[in-house]
Length: 282
Image (cartoon, rainbow, N blue to C red):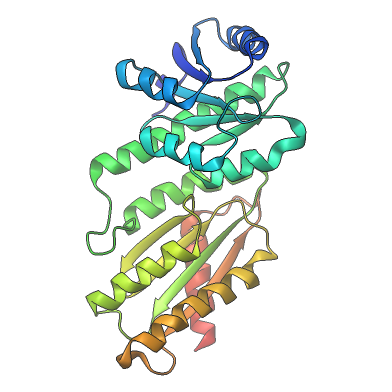
C-alpha cells in the first residue's frame, strides 16, 4: 500500500541558519539522491511557498527557526494539515520534539547527520501516517454528532500508532469511557465529546463508537500516567454531572489499558481488555 511513499520527494525546510541549511541539504542527498529541498527562514515565507508550490514533506528546525514558539508551530500545522511535518531538534532539546508531536507533528529527528537509516525510517513513517490521515479525511470517517473519529477510523489509526509505539519504544494508553446512563441523549453525548477534547491532547486519538461508548488512545504515555489521567477525566466528567439534572449519581465507567512497546498486541486486543475491565467493575 505504501511502496510509493519513498523515492523522489520534495522537502520544504524551515531553517534560520544558512550553515545548517547546507548541512541538511547534504544529508538529504546522502539519504536519497532524488530528495530535493527548498529552504526558507520563517513561517510567512513557508506559507507563501506552500500556497504556490507542491511539497511532499515539511522539515522544521525548532532550534534554529523562528518556530521555537509552539503556538507558531500549531499555526503551521493548521495550515498544512495534509502535508506531514517532521521537526529537527538538538539532542538536549528532545522535549521540543515530543511537544511538537503532541501538537500535530508526525515525528521528530534528533540531529545526527550520520544516521541515514533512522532518518529515512522517520520520513517513511511520517509519509505513511499522513497518507492514512488523509485517507480517513477523504472517507469522512467522522461521527457527525460529535466530530470524533468513528469505530472504523479508530481501528485503522490505532493499529498504525501501535506500530509506531513499537518503533519509538514509547507506550500508549487506551481509555474506554462507557456512559451507563445518557448514552442515547444527543446533547449529553456531544457534551462528553467536548470534555474528552479538553481532557486529552490534540494529538491523541478520540473516537465515538456509538451506544454511549468512547475510546481514546493517549499517545506517548507512561504507565504511571494512567491514574493521573483517569482522575482528571473523572473530575471533568463530574462537572457535567453537576450541570445535567438527569445525571445524578453514577452515570459512567472508565477503564484503561497500557500498551507496552514490543508486546505486539493488536488494537482489537486492547479494546477487548478494556471491555473486560469494565465488566469486572460491575
